[in-house]
Length: 490
Ligand SMILES: [Zn+2]
Image (cartoon, rainbow, N blue to C red):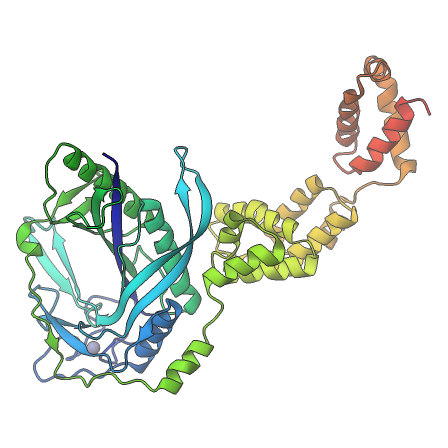
């Protein structure tokens, strides 16, 4: 029997506001424990929430960018549960009428070959069920592990920080699709400037629902929820593990039990969460302290108009406008800063292909080695474009250009002064190359014989010798022409 997985994702993204969702406390990460708290986010009796306009604006932008319909009004609701890091005894979330609904995103997703390489990258559409706003809980710290902690403490700096929860339709049929969607979603939120996408600091968190069914079946299998997926790699590994586990159970004729499981990073497996932690009945009811959220349609329209060019359309445009393949375009539009760098370089150099190659090759390599982001790149897009133009005029060879680039990256200088200072200009004039060629031809009579007997490939040997003698500065084309003449005895 052939099985197919059905996957849906729930993503929590922290909005980049300076203050919390319902109070004026700072959202700064890493402040000393409980420094960013007040009666509202501590849930003290009588404290009333005041909605943060900037958070609503960011949430609406995200909803629009994901193609959602905006509900006006949307309703805040209390999600009740008891946990030490939740002083109010409830989260303020949205339930019946979320801010956004029925969205759709188009993602360039591919298939993972056995080698791990992604092939067949193409556009696929995935549905967004809903996008709603909610406030975050605090954080419990258990010394000595959560089972038998010697001491537990709670940090409420995160309590009340604004989140959006983005729930997808169960549209993914492979772990790769889920992975590509999450990458796309993160990219979109970063493009919009509404989330920093930092999974390590918890600004982006992901839970997955996974079930497996007979291929072609119309009903879903029993789903399992996996929590704690705080990196892209974990998401993919946890999904692969869980799909294989469910396939095995079903092929043995057993049934899947509906449960919540956690990803165990060190054991490379998922394991069931204790059942008492998952037995939640949230008893949602409308938040009595907040009015239904009504939004001015003109304001929504304005935000729609002000949306930047989003990753999907940008990628499509870059592929067409510069004739760049999907995998390369994915890299070059990875962030808006990267996309801007590439486009500027392509425009000034008038050579998009070379711009792409330099950025994905030497530039990316040097950034990685020096642990720098493209935003802090010492070489500007104009400088790289200048270097490409110099190569294209034949003034220096591609090989020498690599040396020049290293120096540009190290010193942030323009290419021209570096070429001059290091004496790297390509030698193209026949007068200075001829003596070198004469010398090498004279020193290698055996290879000359070979050439004259028809083994013309040996010319590569001579070109190599000339390049070595001139420390890579000779123009290979001119050298080739001169050698042909010389060896043919013209
Ligand atoms: Zn507060």
